[in-house]
Image (cartoon, rainbow, N blue to C red; front, side):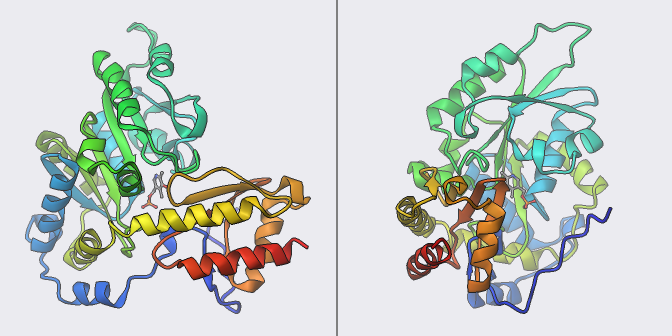
Length: 353
Ligand SMILES: *Cc1c(COP(=O)(O)O)cnc(C)c1O
């Protein structure tokens, strides 16, 4: 069985890419910032641009230290392995990315198991967490860490309210557990909630931010936490091959994103709301009301699977992703304009008649 991704069909150009916010291409200005970057050897601490990115992101997230890594997945794996020992258990939502989409990394790398918690829209309550906590005993796996996704991807891009997150973090801390935030789309949550990112994660111990989603950089994510935690995490970064050399070139793109691509996330949310509103008026399509830039929809009423619907859109240069037999996802980002939304809705109506 090959696990290599299927090559895209490059003969049909993609015109409106709603597949994911990972699809953004670096802008000319971002590439110029990369060209101008000061560089050194990230692995031995001599790349000034990587240090600048780490310092700025740590401040943005209200943590004392940070490290640059190639991807969000590696941030999760480094963080989980640093927090936990072999045999420990992590409590996370049952639809969490660490559970479904990281190739079993928590077990394979960290030696930990994940207990999946239920809850609507990818969010679980403090009571649900409390119910999942076992008395400490020789028989039970040590429960070391609570993990939350902000925003919750498979939950429809839903935001944890600050109070919900605080309640969960309080229960975790009462029981001697730490709290880790998968912040692949943390800035979308901060913008949608109208709360500074550092205040969103104030009650959490570790958090990372993806630069390759809504922020539009080609590579990179930053993991933040206490100075002691990041110091320890460096051994896992090194062990997994996540230490880089002239990382400054990519860090410069991330710094550019911090300067230019955060405030505009509100536009992605408005575009997602307009797309959802338009799709909800297409017969046969149901829409989960979006909170941020992810629009999940159902195709069952149209008689088409989500994959068949996606296949009908593709010749028109429109891509969406498939997340279940009749569940699809359209994602807005900085390469999708309001005009693209109107065009997408017209194409969707056309392919369903
Ligand atoms: C995309 C994503 C990740 C992984 O990030 P990569 O940078 O693609 O490795 C982790 N968690 C969530 C919720 C995501 O959406």
